[in-house]
Length: 91
Image 1 (spheres, helix red, strand yellow):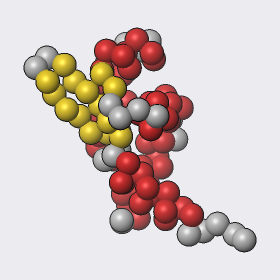
Image 2: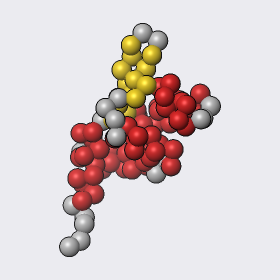
Image 3: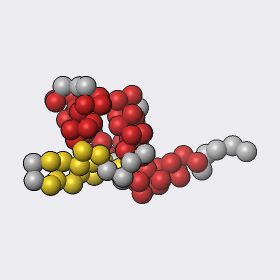
Image 4: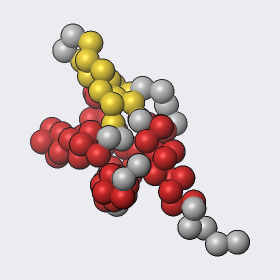
């Protein structure tokens, strides 16, 4: 895990909408794009932007099935990033 990658993940999670998307994905194995669009009630370009940021930092994985897209959280990456953070805990 590089410092640059960890910073990109934390930066992505710094946005409240992206944080909530990751929180929702953490509670489920996979979520359809349509469900996320209904839940967050954002314009298609705004939602696409958030998905792109999460994909580019590596937190979001996409599975295409015909015209449908399904998203899942890259739990391994999130665990590595949080592991780096936990190194600094006091106590």
